[in-house]
Length: 122
Image 1: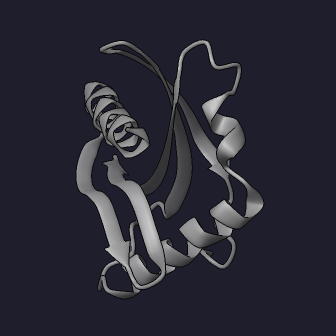
Image 2: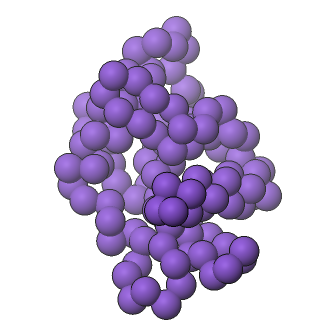
């Protein structure tokens, strides 16, 4: 049930980002270092997106679940992803969080651009 909610939240986040003009490059990207929910292009920037979904009314904010260790894991996966590409984005990379509140079949998304920094990504 929890995984189903997470997948639905990721799909809602992808629709939300598309509506803002982002291009979805990868969804649920996996490598030996872990997983990134979405990899998108925002103009000339490459954006690694962590999506956190919670049911409305639980009292927990989805964005509170992005711990420092989770940030480091995402950064590690991003480095793996970039190592497999010949061209690094012109404007660099960014790490965003999309918090998703689920209420029945309705989803409310809140984006936090540049939610954390990419160590070693300079």
